[in-house]
Length: 243
Ligand SMILES: [Zn+2]
Image 1 (cartoon, rainbow, N blue to C red):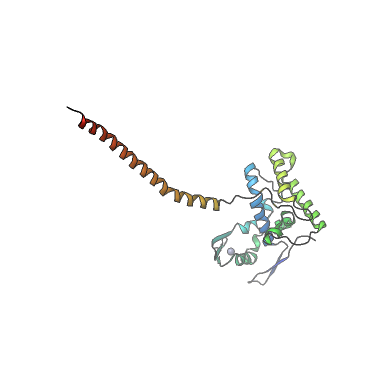
Image 2: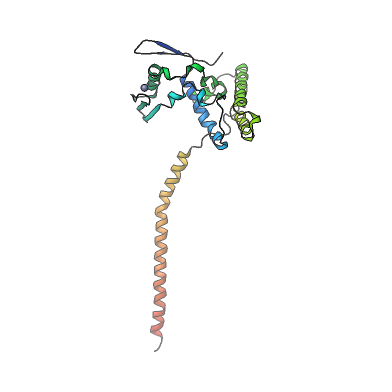
């Protein structure tokens, strides 16, 4: 079975039905996984993936539309093509499907969601629980797909960066395609989340700042007292001295 979902979208104005044989939701999940668990390593190696690689943004049918989403706040999304506002992302998705259908790159049938088997989209989309029974045939197919992506995106004969990333891709995505699926997914980690670390650091510095000033104040007071006493000693000495 191919991992293809049929999405029917109804154009409200014309009543026309467009058929796109690619799931927007799954494509987005695949993209998020690539962003999270692969991009940091590509950036570190300063590696440019070729357009022949199925992970390249050009091979994601929905990429252009996804990049034309403007997130204002939790209850406001905007379409960057026509500036129309929406209460939720799903309404913007529906708007793209009906009003900007012509902007989908459908001619090349490049569906990122087709890589979902290799990239473990189900695991990520089902809030990280994989309790379904392991199917050896499906696992073997996904592993094969995963390895073919590694070969086409990071050809080992293209230098040290490509071979390092080839190795990383196998560890990060392909190793977990085993039965039973006990292997850890994305063992190499993903984007570092600076949020909590920075928050802790700022709270700590805010707490330490008054303490620092207190120490400086006490130190200076001690210094002042010290110089006063030093001044007093010779004065006292002078008084006792018989003249
Ligand atoms: Zn629009």
